[in-house]
Amino acid sequence: MDTHEPMLDRAPRRESAGSGEDGRQRLTKARFRAGAVFAALIIALSVWVLHSFVEALLAACITAITSWPLYRKFSACLPQQMARSAAPLLFTAGITVFVLAPLMFALGALIAEARALVLTIAAADREGIAVPLWLQDVPAAGPWLVANWDSSLARPGALSTWLQRIDPAALLTGANSLGHFLARHLMIILFTILVLFLLYREGESLAQAARRVLRDRIGERAEGYVDVATRALRASVSSMLVVGLFDGFACFFAFALAGVPHAALWAAITGALALVPFLGYAAVAALTVQLVVAGATTPALFSLVLGGLVLVCGDKIVRPMIAHSGTHLPFVWVLMGCLGGFEVLGLVGLVIGPVLLALTRELWKEHVRALALGEAYPPWMDK
Image (cartoon, rainbow, N blue to C red):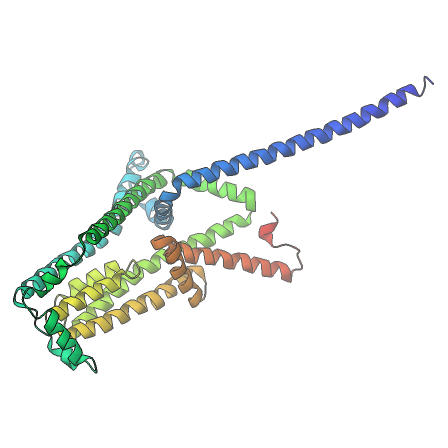
C-alpha cells in the first residue's frame, strides 16, 4: 500500500499542473482580448474626436507625401544646422503660397468681375434693361420671352422692385450658411498648414514607424503596397496640376477665338478654379453672363460652348490619362475613382479615390495569382 501512495499522490499533482497551465493560457487570452477591446475603444474615441479634422489631416498627408522628394532636395541645400528647424517652416510657407496663391487670385478676380457686373446691371436698371436683340430670335419661345422681359425688366427700377420682394430671413439664412462654409474651410486650411509643418519636421520617423507596423502586420509585402499607394497618390496630384494648366491654356485660345475681352485673365481664372472640379464651370458661366449683359451675344455663346468643352475634356480625359500612369487602372476606373472620391471626401477624394482603387487592384492580382498557384489563401490573408 505504501508503494502505491506516491503514485496516487503524483496523479493529482499532474492534473493540477495541467489545469494551472490551461488557466494561465485562458488568463493570457482573456487579457489579450481585453487589451484589444481597450485599444479599439481608444482608437474609436480618437477618431470620433478628430472626425472634424479628417479633411485637414488627409490634405496634409497627401501634400507631404507628394512633395517629399522636393522637400528632401530643398532641405539638402540648406546648412545642416538650419535644416532641422528652418527647412520645414520655409518649405511649408512655399507650398502654401504655391497652392493658395492661384486660387486666391482666381477668386479675387472673379469677385471683382462679379462686382463690376452687379454695378453694370444696377446702372442699367435705373433706366430699364432693354430687351436683348437675340432674345426675339429664340425659336418658338422668342415672343413669349420678349413679352415677359418687357413686363418685368424693361421698366426703370423693375429689377430693384423684384429684389425687394425677397424675404430678408432667407437672405440672412443664406448669409449665415455662407459664413459657416467660409469659416469651416478657413479652419481646414489653417490646420492643414499646421499639420503639414509637423509632417515635414517629423516625416522620416513617422514613415519608418508606419512601415515597421505594416511589415509586422502584413509582412514584406507591405513595401509593395506602400509603393503602389505612393505612385498612385503622386500621379493623382500631378493630374490635378496638369488639368489646371491644360484648362488655362486651352481656355485662353478658346476665349481669344471667341473674341472675349481680357481672354488671358479669364483663362487664368478658369484654369486656377479648374483645380477643384466644377468650379471651372462657375468661371465660364460668370464670363457668359457678363458678355450677355454687355450685349456680346455671339462671344458669349462661343465662350460657353468652347469653355465647357475644354473643361469636360480636362476632367473626363486629361485627368484620368495622367492618373493612369501611376495607378495603372483603366480609364473608366480612374474616372470613377476621381468622381466617387470627390463625392465622398470632397477635394481630397480626387486623390484618395484612385489610390484606393489601385490598392484594390493590387490585392485582386495577388488573390488571382494565389489561386493560379493552388494556394488556399491570398498572401495578404496569411502573413
